Image (cartoon, rainbow, N blue to C red; front, side, top):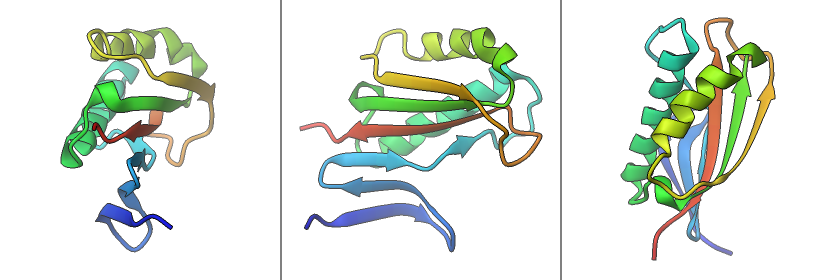
Length: 118
């Protein structure tokens, strides 16, 4: 059995976990109170990038991204931010669905899987 290392943990969750070379993040939501999808998407993707750097990885090690949108009408605006963020990086697999999020203030939530570089 492989060791599991947990980072940025509290009583409920760990923000990022490594098991062998696999990296899993918690669902990430905007923390800055912005009320438009572009700003929230940028905030969440910045958090994701920071978490990856915490464990020695970057966007090129992403293998899967799951996106939940509170309103699918925000799909194109979110994609503009997402595409710019990944413009020079390897593209992971991705799913995007509409969902009721934990707070009406959240317009987007993202969870990611990645692998540590060799």
